[in-house]
Length: 174
Image 1 (cartoon, rainbow, N blue to C red):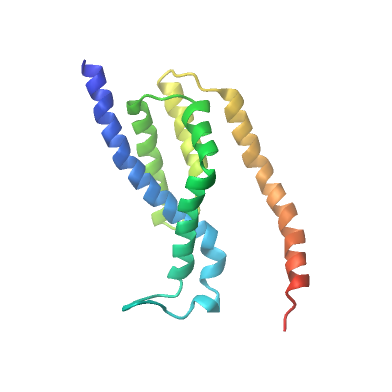
Image 2 (cartoon, rainbow, N blue to C red):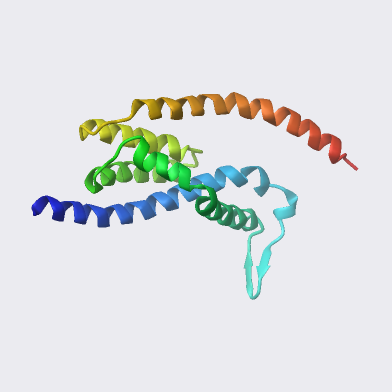
């Protein structure tokens, strides 16, 4: 039928925009993760790999990118399940709408050097498209996600202080 064909075409478009989203999120998320390291003097010397020489700050970018990929494979399944099925279930065309939105916002934000949360952008797009498409948005799950966003900021502050103190104690300045 015409609708099935439309959804099939949307699924191919979704694959393209997932790639763009992945590139933008990788650029933003890895940058967020390695930002404290790249200006360290350890990474001021070039990274030599065989006949190739790369700027030293590429080393943490490469390690961060590999870590992000490994994390997705090893522990990312639960997050994928929550976002794919427990917030809202979308058709390929609805998912394409959300994906285009996320890809645009993440790409533009990353291009301008804004440290964005791809998860915030994605969840907002899923909710918006779910409401417009008249799909059931599971508000209980949305509330749980928003609560997790709110509590992680003070928890990060609280955990960072003793961790910093412990590192200062264990690694004295020579």
